[in-house]
Length: 248
Image (cartoon, rainbow, N blue to C red; front, side, top):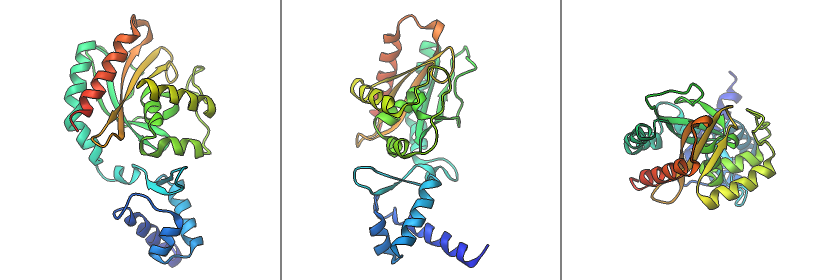
C-alpha cells in the first residue's frame, strides 16, 4: 500500500471521528474543521457514502452516519437494547399467535433481521437473524423507509442500485413506493403481500425510542393460507411495537 493510500485512510478515519462531536456535517464544515481542501473532503465523503458509512439528508444536504460503523465488531448498542427490551416480548407474541416474529433495523436500502422469535410450527421462508433484504419489499423495511430510519429513505432515493423484484408482486417503481410509504406513515403499519416470498404475508409496525425516532421495526410472518382476519395480526403487531417502545 502506498503512502498516499495510507494517508487517505487516515483522513477518512478523521472524518468518521468528527461524528463523536455532532451528528451532521456538511462538506464545507468538514473541510474547515480538518483543514482539508474542499475537493479532498468531497472525494473522501463520496467514498464513505459509497461504502455505506454515511448518507446525505436531502433537505439539509448534510451527511450523517449510517448504522454500519456500529455494526462492525460485535453488536450495536441499539441491538443490545432491543435484545434486553424486546426479546421476551416477541417470544410471548410468537407463542400466542403461533407464528414467527422478527425485528429488523435499517442499513442503507436494506432491512436486516436482528431479533427473531420462533413459534412451535415453522415456515421455511421466514427470515433468520442476519438476513438482509431490500427494504422496499418487506413490511419491516417499508416501516423503516416510511419514517426514514437511519436515513434509509434518503438513501433509497439517491441509490443507483436497482430495486430487486423478489416476486411478481414486488413494487420497484420509486414513485409508487413513495406514495405507499405516505399511507404507511399515516396508518402506522405496513403489509408485505407476498412481495418477498410467494405464499408469505408479513405485517409490520415501527418501533420508536424515547425521542420518537424510529429505531427498528417488528413484523409477524404468516403463511397466506393461514390468514383469516388481517386486522387481528395488524392489531397485534402495532400493540407489540408500542409495548416495546414503552420500555425505552
